[in-house]
Length: 563
Image (cartoon, rainbow, N blue to C red; front, side, top):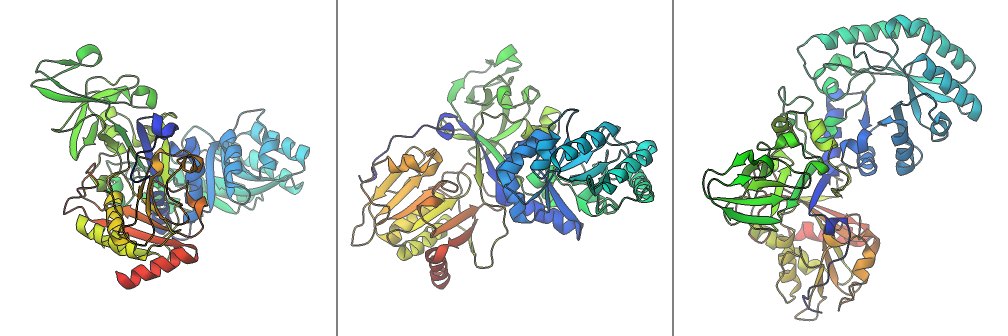
């Protein structure tokens, strides 16, 4: 088979016309940024509510790879699932459970458990006696939220009761903690009052004879903007996902955070309508001139707030536009820039550095907060994860590629190095330039056939013109498993061909431990939604090149010599 189209497989990413891309390296960057701000304090990465909608297991792994000391989730059920996902070892704190909760299971899962009420102290002690497993306890005190935690005036009695359990070997008191109510308003004065109350709580606990190992008070806003609240550990949540705790005070870009989630969808309808056309339910919008409209297949069933109607921004083919009319259950309408057609991609929100609207922009349009925009994104929207969260290794290679021609030249050099059996994985957002790079690889390998974006083609085989290996160009975006690649019956042996895979991370590594991974990153100011075969001259990219295994590292070293 030579550049023939292969039937698309089934799977969520094929069937559903939208996707939330999650950049785990952005999460790693954000965690390291917070860690740098707080100095010697430890970092507990919060992954509650399915990691704020980003995918708990993957985000937890990224945070651990980036150096998190702890993981934290609110609900006990989440914590039990998280332990199964990350395995034994990482320290996990959970802080919400009701009377009668399965605390015996929590102890067997080696979870650290918050107690913030007298009943919680006694139920946890009973679970310890039933299992014989000492509980690692975080004692929560209320300092101003009037929510969870023991009141200061009841703390002495609670501390005495806990001390008795410590003496019996029932409890090991790991931490004293509380939560700030207005840390996102740095000048309001309440945080300083709460710090004073927390200090009072420390005194009460110490007077009761409890030896607390860790004090923690600050979440994202406290960690970033209140140095006195950092204590021994901080608990960032929203900041790790690249969203500011208060964009009116400092935006995510000003803080240096990188958005982890990019939400996009394929247009399913494009049409021209005359002036005076009413749009969507209730005709709350009406065109004032002949207008090109498109339908984006996401709605309030997917977490798109109905308050975003006639207000929320999006980017289509590099142009910013807005929702027109009311958001419906499964779709909404937007004005389209010239030349846009069904199948083109609409970008709802992502990183401001890429020219996209942000989750905070959507929050402003929907009269809510960025936390809610990402957390409420519906489960039927597939999440697609990229990266690992780990810091770039010293032996990785990094290149700045100013223009499309430079991208092709890098690919051409790489093509001269590749041989049969080599695997190259290309990672990066839509429009990053993966196909442009592959075009250069094809030239360097001296293979035939036009290299085009494989969006609607699972795999293309490009025959060698001389005696070298063939090039197999794969779009793993459409693959739900490697079995589907095996079932394609390609007229080429992957063992004898050089294989280039777009969107392959997490799917094709099993093919070989020796591989080359190239991550393509857009800098601030580059265009969004541009065609990969037509990168603009100012669309510079950063290439991070990582070699795995002896052959992968050999390719990196050869590229260093040639580039």
